[in-house]
View 1 (cartoon, one colour):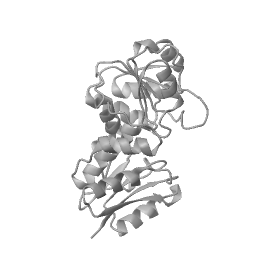
View 2 (spheres, rainbow, N blue to C red):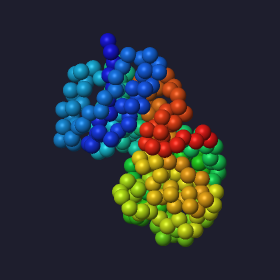
View 3 (cartoon, one colour):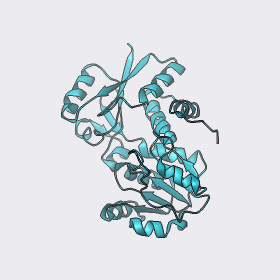
View 4 (cartoon, rainbow, N blue to C red):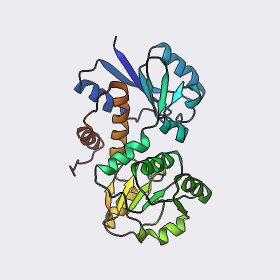
Length: 275
């Protein structure tokens, strides 16, 4: 019987996950389909029950359901338990199991570029995405992580959880030259305009500046970092690697991530450069 998978969210029409997974299914000769499903928050439980009834094999979750889905699942993997958020669900034959591949996907996108784990990291933001990335960085062996956030209390809480340190936005700007890696996790950059989460006036040339946003490919943060001669990394790698981890959970197959990064980059109007 043909298997089917999905991504649920509100909104969902913008998602490139169907393109990515359907391409991988075709490449590996897997008789399966992946569809986007628009699910409003009030319909989440009913939608999940309907998907189970229709024998879904696995699905991804995007905003605003990453936390709301948790009570409906039978089991959580450690990554999802730590974060209390889920972006990937697979069916193990008996239970629907939730995991979170976002943080590990981001770290993989960093390690492919051979980022030195001893560099001082400044994590900008303290929301769900930042938490997943912080925990994944710690698991991967990054030893010096500082968190900054508009609401300083949240930065303090996340820093305490990972054994890192916290600074205010103003302090982060003043001390920016200390950091070898900047990771932008806030929603600044999705909106129109040239808004930045922090000033990059004091950033050192050669600093690695990463943004988890993949559309647009070049956010105002990355544009300014490039002007300052930083090494920039957009969110396409994170998007593809988190998807690849999900694909492997569903099929047992590791897909071609480099080729997919190229396809997604070109689909978004960019030019792929093999590093």
